[in-house]
Length: 438
Ligand SMILES: C[S@@+](CC[C@H](N)C(=O)[O-])C[C@H]1O[C@@H](n2cnc3c(N)ncnc32)[C@H](O)[C@@H]1O
Image (cartoon, rainbow, N blue to C red; front, side, top):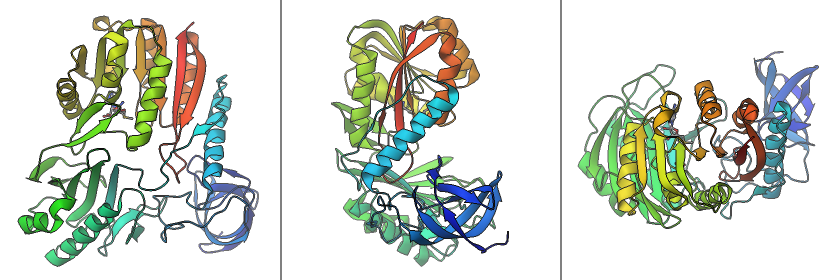
């Protein structure tokens, strides 16, 4: 097949990346921005891992679930690959993706529905907008590391965040410094990270650059004015295309952003993880509390605890709550957050979950919320040895969740699972599973 060659393809399913799937010349194929049941014309782009990747050219027969996207960048931008999917249909597809993962691993659980997000727009509290080589500022096309979409609007964070983006784009152009170019692996301006306290009206802005000084930074802070309660210059001197800074220089405001969820206040530092949908984080916490149960236990262990979101939210359910996290900065923030909220029974351990010495923390209940790859085999082994009464597993990746539940089957019975939509217009979904000791 040649680049640009056109094919007509019937879309029969959806993959975990949210692409519509079908077949071209007897080979598995996928096209972004398409829905099951559609017939589309698409052009050949590449073949990756045996799958033919095509670009949508024309929808020949639309699905009844296709809808008019709100954002003019939908159909190009990787931020919302499902904006053309009607929202109830998005939820059905997510439910099916989770159940398919469970089925594929032989996990005897199914979710009936995905709890919808009440806000379909401006639901995120963090966005990492990237610079492109021609001064673009926005997001990338899905699956394309060097195709930038210059966003003049975005409905994910807030209208104010779009104003911040405009100011930073103009400012970067006015300095005459080059934006980062992923092909040449050089340039200065790399990322704009905006975080918002949805319940506190705070906004923390970090301009991430390569090594060097930020020109006229005072002037910039002045231009941002009340749009930013805190401003940082972050430096990523590496060649890796990430928004994480090795060094942070504070230009304005407090060193952290404060957010409130379910009665607790959380201090969040520029690079700490925090659940990106504040309103649904509240629902997620309540789901976890429900699975943890009414009966107060001795020790609750919260693995991968971040800045203590679940640890503090669950402080009332155990005599001792212990959070474990590999990011030392997040652990410091978690301790600060415990003090801030008057929680006196929380301890925090700065360690990798797979390296934890369990003898010091024999738990009755374990809450786990790992990053996308799921649990390290040593964590599964430690859980099987420690045999807590109950495990509540929170996951942003149902495939690694299903694999881990299967690994844990020797010691733990999967009891039930539920799903919550923290990420409308994307195939991502949060799943919570309850396991009990066999
Ligand atoms: C999905 S986040 C969950 C954070 C937290 N539970 C929350 O709700 O805010 C995963 C966390 O795991 C941490 N992490 C990544 N690898 C780790 C490891 N090997 N051991 C412990 N923590 C790790 C990350 O720094 C991140 O804070």
